[in-house]
Image (cartoon, rainbow, N blue to C red; front, side, top):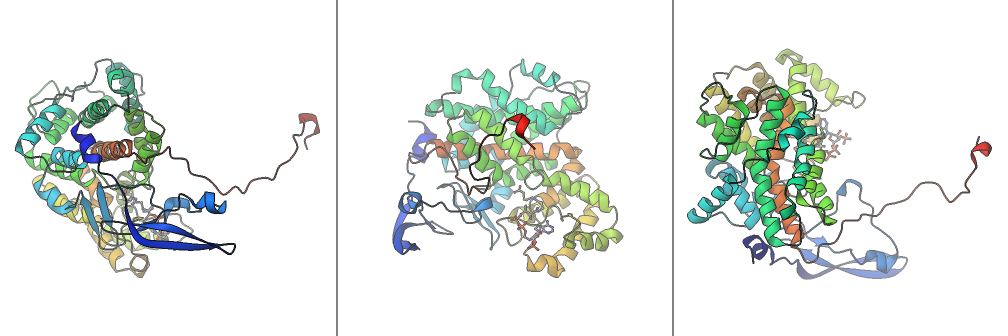
Length: 444
Ligand code: CMC
């Protein structure tokens, strides 16, 4: 039995002795309550349709737990994020991305021997098939790198026929390694291609984040030394973005995977979902917004526009479906942002000034206070990337690189859950009642 399989074999919801009773057309129906280790309990309505002939209606999943999971816990009111029980801040400060990937996949931080073996395994999979270079060359140079990434991730299925049997734990495991290892390589290739530079092969004596920066910024013409402060900051960013329970892209990965689709296709689906500006695309939108504001003196006008519902303008990097408090990832990133800008001699960077002032004003404005809108992870990440020399089109790509560990851990958890079923939501149909077909010559 593989390590991943054994860790996930313990799945089961803890049935409490409570029930929830609904009264439908005079008939009382009881549903079992399952208690969470922490956070909200749920009541199991899977028999609701059989009992009542009705569905529940919950657009945006405001009150719906779509699955049982042991990976990540969020308390949005308290501003808590934990991977496998560990608070995010000490993980970001003291751990590294590959340790966190191990934690997400296997449920435990690795010991020294496991760490060495895991790092080596990932490192041995960093290179991509040479044929992929031709796939990249088929894209226009001006393509958005997320479009390229969605295609490149899906295309991996064409190269790894030996690991497409999703019912084989060993094949699932090798796909997990391949995805975690190759996503940075594909990400750096998408950047290099966009600027017309040659692809840089991974260098396996470098750490995960160092190697990524090397593939992004070195050229065959001169020696490139990775700045350790930037490599550490990159690693922190990757840790902070590694998982976030059942967000839109992760739910997309699970839904795609629930049909038995291969993990490469599922990652591609996750990338597509992440791309949207309400999700991973927000970090790019934050930089565009700060640029548009342009100067601290313009902030009050901008805040007025945000508060005017007819303007359609949002304060990007603010607000979150789950966090109704400061996003704990933003707390870490605000400090990392200052460290990186100090290291690069950019502490007076105008965009940072605008961001800090914007945050101060918004946190004291009744509009944001009443709606519990706080900075989220994307508010500062873009400023860090920009200081590192990463163009804004690549920001969401970096989010995808980081989230790969979470996506694949969640996908595996689902695949190993004996209770998992194909995801097939139902609907409240409000379309036309039945009507007769009208031939073309009779249509008005
Ligand atoms: N600026 C201005 N008003 C906002 C904002 C914002 N950023 N976010 C929410 N609101 C208002 C919203 O208009 C609504 O007001 P009202 O009650 O008067 O109608 C109220 O706050 C509640 O918002 P909501 O839209 O019902 O909240 P939601 O949970 O559906 O949306 C969100 C969450 C993240 C999509 C939204 O806050 C948003 O669009 N934020 C900006 C985009 C952003 O930064 N996204 C990154 C999220 S973190 C990274 C990730 O997980 O991908």
